[in-house]
Length: 269
View 1: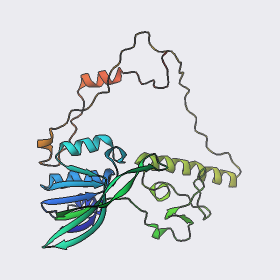
View 2 (view 1 turned 120 degrees about the horizontal axis):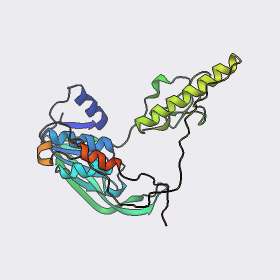
View 3 (view 1 turned 120 degrees about the vertical axis):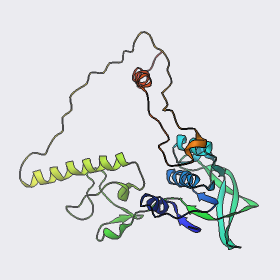
View 4 (view 1 turned 30 degrees about the vertical axis):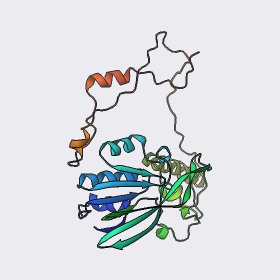
């Protein structure tokens, strides 16, 4: 698989058992969870891997723990590096990256990467993966109103521009968590039930929850206790194969975690 490829497509082919060797040197462009997954996968395939990200490490959208695990596995992180060009030379890929420095803060509270004039770094790789974002294939959404490539919906009911059609998940919000898509499905179901109930003159379903009494009192004795972390296979061993890295909690760790106070809403003077 020597060349330039999409990170998500590579992971899909890995799941299907269809991904060929990636070469000895791999570059992954991006700072999200897909970039981290691609990098850690290639590391387990025997490659030396570098992640190139255009902002600072603290601005990476990937889970912090995933980034830490990747670094522990010997993956190099090159921050403030913006892709400039890719060309072939002597059977390999020459990757030119523009060095940047932190600029003004943007609307997300992150500092914009500002190119440093004349500062370009060049490296050679066998394979380069682009994991710089995802987009929705809206080919199936003929007749639906789109907004910047995503299906446009009423934010309360999740109804689309076509009567009787509701939408949710990544095709509406863009890349998000699986639980967000599940929640959207539930909201849409309530909306559909409400519409059908009105048509037949009935009452829509109402979900009732048992009330749980919550007070602002906390135990008299308060002991600060850190969150338990599941033990992991050491980096030098886990990069040899695709075993699950986290080994799970033993019963004592479970008890300690369950004993922690999770009432973050209570302020203690």
